[in-house]
Image 1 (tube, rainbow, N blue to C red):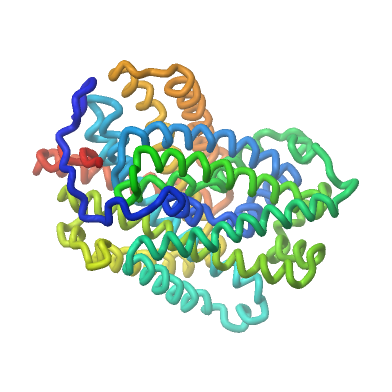
Image 2: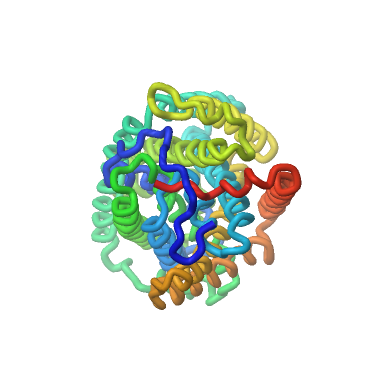
Length: 476
């Protein structure tokens, strides 16, 4: 383990396609995971159902917190370039507990990526299509199962045939999506005329009920989720300790601006006093676009939303695969067969495993709760671990730089610690006051998984402690 300025005893050779991606292609990994158009279709509806016209206010607060989370990732990405990035971050944090948090943190982030793939991308897509064509889905209520199966097969095939083709597809379609959202948002703000107001940036629409605001914050922060998933492709990026931080800042700025602008434009046009009804409509964003931007605007939004869910699936699966590969490479938790690299420089066995396992999770969750509720359930459950790891990495950042005598108080102490406090508050509001059943059980499932990971840690510690010492060491 690193102590002071000592370097971790680490292997330097990666089986992945080292140096394949440019900064913009690495940027695409995070853009795809976030899926801005898909976010407007899924998260805006859920948040508006809680806080109505305070949707933009919640998103501004959430973005400030997520900006702090991104700074934490930014600082760590200048130190580490590794496929199982969060395991590597934690290994260099708290000296005595680094081994435990490296094991626990990376595997809980695997949970985040896996459930993001199944919950947000796959079930989110089927939910969007369900309400888009209600007559078809009412006649064939099981139709979401073949939809998910086909899309998982398609995204898995893209992942199998190499990272370059996947990232270029996401970059070109994702930037077209962002440009479309920005231009249409500006048009709708202009069309809003006298409806433009600053009230939506306050808690007044919910009677200054900050309990509701904080309950919505969990979904608000998750709205910007995925931006930091750039880091799992660090091993495959050229000059990663330079390009990954640049990609993070660039992406956070673009996505933050795009989503805040779009949430404002939709809120004022739908009507401040009418926003609680926004969540009761099937695809309210599509309805708004059809009303104010015509058939062309509505159809283009539908196309971009569908593609956005798809690219999110590709990116989430990419992160899932890299995290599994990192642990398998160290001989822990996953079998050594998962380290086998195919001719496309991708761990092919992991790709197939991830596709099949994700399909099982999506189908089981969808049958138990229905596609839409299952989607929100899995998103809430995995977000707990994203938040926890960011908070922990923020605290570790100050310890690491203090130990190495490179501490910058504002960047390494003030922002990370304030962010960590806000994150812990958000986590508390997932548990109490909890959302209605079955969503309140999402944190329980996350807790059971955390317990499982802890049990396996102590199993390795008693049976094969030497293996644990490797976890988190690898970095280019």
